[in-house]
Length: 131
Length: 221
Image (cartoon, rainbow over all chains, first blue to last red; front, side):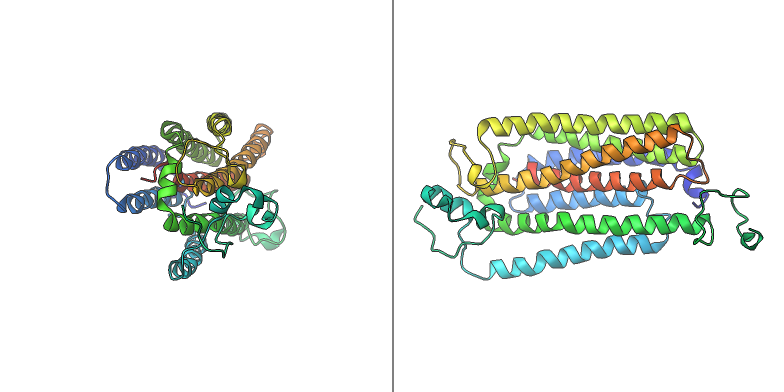
């Protein structure tokens, strides 16, 4: 409820909205240019800039007590850990067969895979059929 | 009440202040802290889907590229614009509530509700198009136009992520309607507008998640 947060800030919101819309155009435009495997990296970087603008200005983290930002950022750090370790795990083992591939090659096996239906993940351990 | 006389910065007797808070300021920041904790759990809930997406995308990038060609980029971009503008109208509603402007609070909340509705209408057209083409998740996948079989998994992530996000949009619309009713009953003022602020935070998180969903689902190339 700090005073300066609410007196002069209504025009900055419009500037932030403009920046967010411009960045949306940039990210759509970048998707039509081929940067190879960097396309996804660029898209995520632009999204992160946009998310930072939303969090700092629309969500008032700029004026809030730092504890709110600490909670927010630490949830993102833990999300990063959550992504990192499974990624290391899955990239350092043999190729797994996803549920979708088994489904296409063995349509009769649908009934025996109810558990895999909910979680389309690396549940299968059988060797990959020739495709 | 004289024991609380150190509450000198706000109106003489804040009726909304609950007895276990020192002052209105502390009550406000406590509510906000609680909201941020909720938002952290929301991030971790969506996080599971994002991690699954990241793992499977790293294993089958070609299926992801093939799958995303079935998504409608202009529709996705339009929805991004809808949510960004709705975030702006939401923050203006919070601003108006904090400056005792009831008319603008209600108008901005109504606009937010309208853009949220527009988002869901666009989503409805996108979903029905996918259903029609058989682009469904997992074993429901019935598309016969070729492409890598792991596309079924891409659409699993597409529907799980946009579906969970869509549920959040619906909940957000309910919350905004609730705030509008309370605002029309003159329950908010510059001294007390915590519910507007917290619903605003929730709505911005919904926007924030879509900011990531849009490039990850529609713009993989």
